Image 1: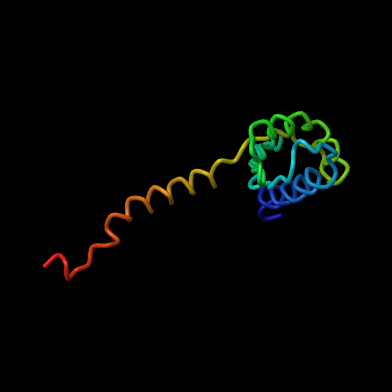
Image 2 (image 1 turned 120 degrees about the horizontal axis):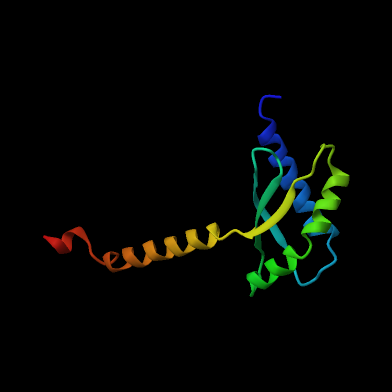
Length: 122
């Protein structure tokens, strides 16, 4: 029982991912990637960070997913052997998008210097 918090986070993440991708019958949500679960220290709340594969309108998909929070919690209670299942709250994980924007900005910054060679400077 060294890292109970870490083990529960991993279990919640795997089970929530399975529930969202295989048990939900809403086609408006699409394919969901559960990127991270942050548990409150008292295990009363789980913040679930998700991203949507090939989604044109991820915020609309997130709203449709938020409407299923009760179902996900009920299904999670059936899957896991814990005393109290935390309240589930979904959030859009924008870390991948911000990393891609940063990478693109760095690439654009480096482009003007591509054609300059050391021989040309001397």
